[in-house]
Image 1 (cartoon, helix red, strand yellow):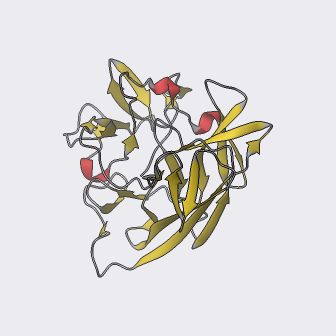
Image 2 (cartoon, helix red, strand yellow):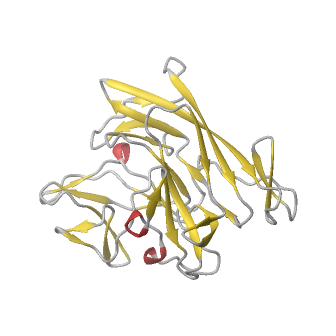
Length: 258
């Protein structure tokens, strides 16, 4: 299930964020059951080393999950080498099964929205660039993931575009994904930069570019007084930035920009 926002009017000091300037959140609900937001991996739980963020796997503390990597806003050729182990734990997932894997961008002002294919400036009503516009200058970034023998799950990797700067000084980048997987990995192998499942020789979908058919919309609220961005789900209030009324929220959910 994909959580987006919907357009609404201003209410009681809470500025509702338009669908044209939303943050996109991907939640994948396992078949046959519901996914609890508390099971999501977040930066609050992570250790970051060499631009890669790791979490201890929730159901097995002898294993690790890689949830995101960090881009410096300049490099055009990037290689993320995911080790077989981190702090003595086998690294078994590339990406959170709830929300995939993020390549984090340094800018907090602009982002790509795959729902409409536009670049947006946060909290503004109108998009500032269309990635399908042939006149828009887009720079390619090649990102290679080098994976070891312990990886048993590869999630979707996003965003498909990155952006830095602001409306007056915008730079847009297209992310091209490549994979190099150890010959000793029993689950996956790679060919021409594409990961395949050994079980059926089928390529693995790794690009977070298409919205699922069962996507649902929820309304985000931005409170100018507290700086908190929240949404309501099943009668509970979730803070996207980890703080609610100045305190860390038990229902903390990490920001996910596709």
